[in-house]
Image 1: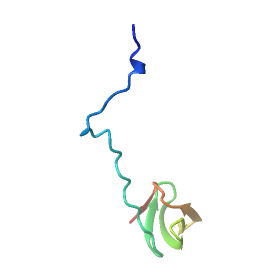
Image 2: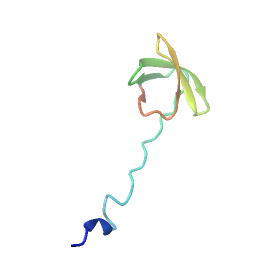
Image 3: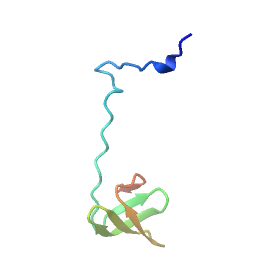
Image 4: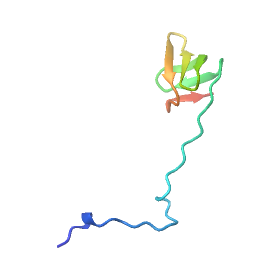
Length: 75
């Protein structure tokens, strides 16, 4: 018996499995923007570092978060 693991599957040209889905657009954060983080909660942007990271004040603590961050949502 032949193993089916050696056979590669062929997809049709119109198959949805051929093309990867595009990444969602990245939110551009500016000073004083309100954001929500899954772990830290609501916060305010107090610093932006050239689309590399943002400094956010969450009330009890300040965090520097690299962008883009899936857990960070602009409100």
